[in-house]
Image 1 (spheres, rainbow, N blue to C red):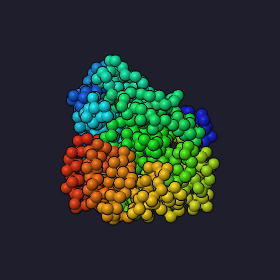
Image 2: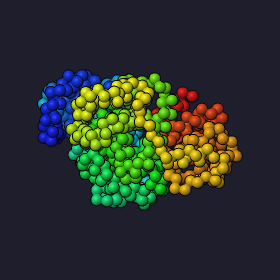
Image 3: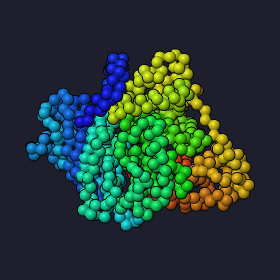
Length: 621
Ligand SMILES: [Zn+2]
């Protein structure tokens, strides 16, 4: 195992010593609260430090099959290795390559968590080999028919492991507090290309066999695999785009400034430590905007807007190479550490490249979205605290604007209180100090006080850490963002009944979204038709604008847009878009039945993550 603590101590010997002395009590407390409620593993006893994966991708049976070799650090000479699994068929287990079969037992199935896999090992066992195959229903994996791809000729598959779905395609210790390196050999049909969250080749192999190496320790939720008819285009020295061949030119144009983004990120918070940074554009059923799989971000094609207006997604996923992938939330209750830092960092990259007025637009839109979400959740809802308590629940419940936007605004509050230079040097040091480690909220707060606040009461009162982290809602000291750019949209929205007169020259996606959100909630069909005729909303190719427009259409029974909406819901599987549309359709008595009809058609094309969310909506109605 690579011992990164050594690297850290070498760079900051004094700091490490001070931390070791000063943080003992708090750290002890941390080790109690560190216990990951979403994993059966007991890494304090026996911890997996490296994986050798060997799998065959079978599109006919929709399964992955083969074996995984786990390198185990048996800290307490225990006789049991406990892993996570979900819907896996375990064929046999061997120890230390001597082909002697080891005893293993699968525990009872628990909702969201799957089943524990307990393997009898010896106190000196180093290697555990597990032969297994996945279920066609594996929650992490989506198998797409050729008709669901851009090319229409070949099938496609991809995994989405976050938060606790890695266990549905690899038996492992599936918690963000456990980090390991991995190698993999993946065999897929010839004509297709396999890619992982690791070093990747840029050309197809004639034998369909691909080898991968991830030499940095990563948590399980960053294990990722995609297989399809994929081609590559370089966008700079160490970056490029993978996509289906027909999507490649538009994707390469959209993300052409990737190298500038990497340089900007490095100038802000230190060297990029993952070798190459590439982006894989997936088919539209991908449930998220992007997934920060190391070395290879997985991204939705819905950000290819044709005007480069949605590239902040790349800044976001790139920022995760520091916040999340390098310094990782120790449990899903600490999710804001991953996402709050990443949104903050994303804004700083965007500010460096596009200027402050641009970022003010992003901030204002995001803040408004969070306010809306909180109004639905309720101000006193415990899930509006940054530190969550997700015990007994799906960690996916923590994926709200709280972690992302409240988290970011908390960090902006600290920045405002201490000043940008001090804040930036703190963040730099934070990433270096905790590189390749996982960290809890409590540990972060101890470090923050030690490095930046220094028990200064004036600063403490300015920031109000406890209110932000442990209390519900938004504290009253939250920074207020004004956007002069979005004020243009607000003025235009007031005069929406005269669309011919509106000056929308140079508007970006953000201007349009704010314009649509500032329109009155009730608009008559004639005025909607006038708006639609002038701005061609129903025919828009921009998925963000379409999502907002269709919501307006549903609220106002503007059924002229419904055909386009149905097509949209049946082709796009990004949860951020499909969820609000189904909510609106179900809330309107006239479209409730339509919601169910459309979902019946669209559901097979969604990833399990999106299906779980929409299934719940349908059940509640
Ligand atoms: Zn993120």
